[in-house]
Image 1: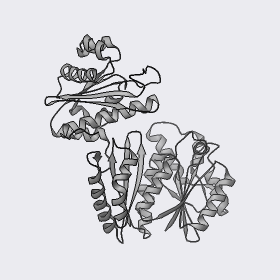
Image 2: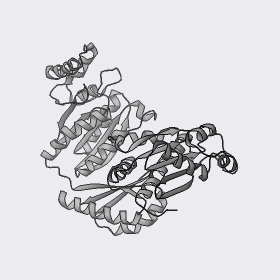
Image 3: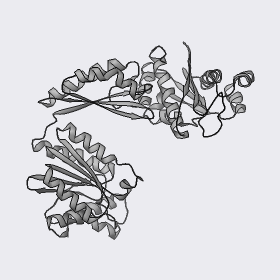
Image 4: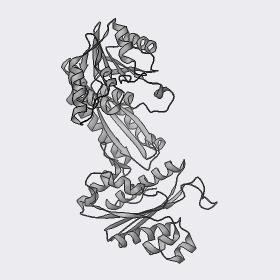
Length: 416
């Protein structure tokens, strides 16, 4: 089946909001065996929405629109599809009861404007919105299916998983393509491609998609087959072969975050961790505590910007700071040891560096960062040369520090 995706909203066109829905729908439809042939983005204008939707219905078997289903003046998708099908907007009492129930559950009065959420094109099949008020809509036209979905990502995803996917499978669409993820960090996309491209070309019924970001490169491995089971086996075998080419830079074979992987390793060893941060200002601790249950292994940490606080809280020797400076491998090591002793944990992890945009020198320009880990078995220190904005450098530094800890816990030899 051919599918088209239409995302609606001026905020997507002017760049003020990222289009998360098209990527999600493309991935999910591909995994169900559909072929996504076109993605379009249009403003919140009835004429534009109607025109692009009509053309899509003439070309594709499945058409998805996202956005424009709210109750404000710029939410015009319902008007556009009603005009496309020559139908009036009428009040759906069942939908209105559901909207009222959501407000009643929160002990809030329902604003009159929300009645608009229950105004639906005649004959449209409403799709329950379990995470919001505005329902989705389903139409059929000449054998093609039109799914009109909300633009809020959490609402769209809930609607797709709870209704759209089961509906399509009931119509005979089965996953003939399966996806598997490989997550890497510390290796640029170009070098990853050098390592795996030749292998990827030899892998039957397999596609590899590179997804680079500040914190690393994910590889989406898509396996195809005549049945869902066959596609899954293809994807899993290809995933294993490709991942083997990228060790030790692979930290997950799935969608786990690096902080979750590190937390798992600490839990398995019944070990505890504390952190000392300078240029990252608490971001490392924030990432670690994003993981549910992290209190089992993460004890806490300190943010030490000034040399005075580094000495007072972490007992860093004044001579080390004077000789090597706050941004140095020696200071990072002392920070890791100091926080480990201060918090009485099995491991200490530290970051110090120049995140910019100012503060750099000829010897230590913006982007120079030192990370260190200390444990009973010893220490490791790594110097990083990072590029980008202040936020980019801080994000990359935290990722590198977590990966240094991962490799230390797994006793993987130093890389690069």
